[in-house]
Length: 99
Image (cartoon, rainbow, N blue to C red; front, side):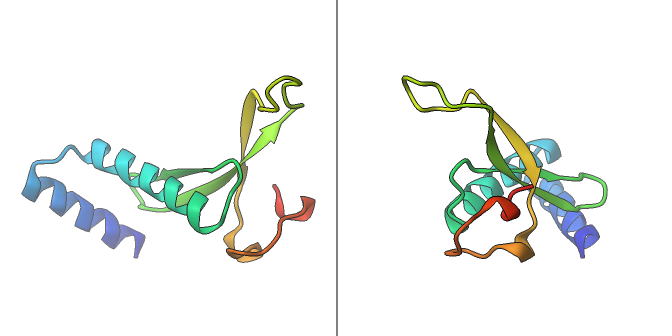
């Protein structure tokens, strides 16, 4: 199925004269926003689409280190492998859910 998606995207790019990498980048960003919203991820997600196979890799962003004392913000985020079968929208998270 992933191969069919890439074929469809390539056909769309040719038909509409769209840059393939630009389309993949925009699709990744759109999926990142969707994962964050639908799964209520505190720190968002990182999505990577393999341009050859069409496989989609999703990582939940988690904070690294300690938050800044003044702002409470984390200076770095780590992309941990996200396992969608382990958590569904609306479920709480605990340490076992984070990779």
